[in-house]
Amino acid sequence: MGEPAQPIERVGPQPGPQASLVACPAHEILYGGARGGGKSFGLLLDWLAHASHNGGDARGILFRRTMPELEDMLDKARELFPRLGWTYLEQKKTWHSPDGATLKLRYLERDAHADRYQGHAYTWVGLDEAGSWPRPDPIDKLRATLRSAAGVQPRMVLSANPGGVGHNWIKRRYIDPVKPYTLQSEIAGGSRWLLTYIPAKFEDNFILQQADPGYIDRATDKLPEWLAKAWRDGNWDIVAGGMFDDVWSSSYHVVRPFTIPASWRIDRSFDWGSSRPFSVGWWAESDGTDIEYQDGTKQTTRRGDLFRVTEWYGWNGNPNEGCRMLARDVARGIKEREQAMGYNVQPGPADNSIFDVENGQCLADDMAQIGIRWDRADKSPGSRRTGAEQFRAMLSGAVPENGTRDEPGLFVFDTCRHFIRTVPTLPRSEKDPEDVDSDAEDHIYDETRYRIRKVSRSLKRRKMKGF
Image (tube, rainbow, N blue to C red):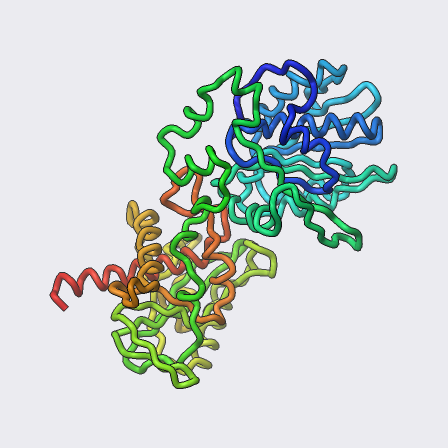
């Protein structure tokens, strides 16, 4: 989401964060924070300063996530560039300066779009509203395009507000390591690469304050409290973007493996994927029996506590990319793993898509022929929202209050590295903050959600029966 158009009295940065951005010596800069801080104009002004300094050797490309958002950025460029003699070629969506510098405007809706630019060479790459990308993967690919045969220092500038689907990765990369305006150094391609964060708020945008003093109130009105605070204050240290930020604690949820009591139920859940990863999770559901770790320490459990004891994640090593295994081969792999476990594993819930019949073939039947059977997952209307709420409730149930736990909780063996890698940082959906972003790497989440729905229904039946 961009900011409103504003009158430009002069072609140059405003005093404060915009001026600091243009003067910053870092190779990679995150600019922004609160809404109304002049992020989009800041990126355009930074590019103009880069082009002014490097003349015809400057080659830039500026991205937004979608085509409509790109049009918003183009409108802003039309306010600035013609004043400096730049011309725009509509068909190529490219600005040209009088001395030969060029700036392309492009959209980057899917990760695969970044592959189009491999082999390109740019001296400046800008990404406006970087928080709209749920992962940094496509942005990292664009780093490889930053080079210059003329010796121009490459530069990447991102703008972002807290609270978007990309909140967590942006905070982890730019906000957490160092304080604002402080240069952090990393080695990239054998050379030193400097990163920094420059915050900007509505109060720093004097032009917008004069032109539209009520903007920030309108922008934050009727928003969820966490998002309004994020946009108004530019505060990244809040529960924003992540579905489980406020309920996940590795010190409680991640546990050491232990021998499963014989009285506990053990089953599995499944989310199918081919071009995307598939996920199999094996679960042990407590009947209230105490557990004992290998060092002899004991721990009480509550009936309904759910422990993820192992997993199989079908990916090719790249985030959110599957390994394209056949369902029969997945079933054989499950069978081999369960034989090695030595437990009596019961069928559990699976993605309903495996029960669909296409061209006379059903994946569930293919797997059943190998001896691996599944129950249908609950995908009734509203089940995604309800499942997310129950997921959060079980994570909350694992954390004791005043030394005790009253509700069943969700726990994960520390060997389940893919759950720990993907689930705690899942972003919220921009369209529905009560659900996770389905474009994120949510396959383990879905498979776990199916299993949680099953234990929640079981507990509900027990309460109704009075035990």
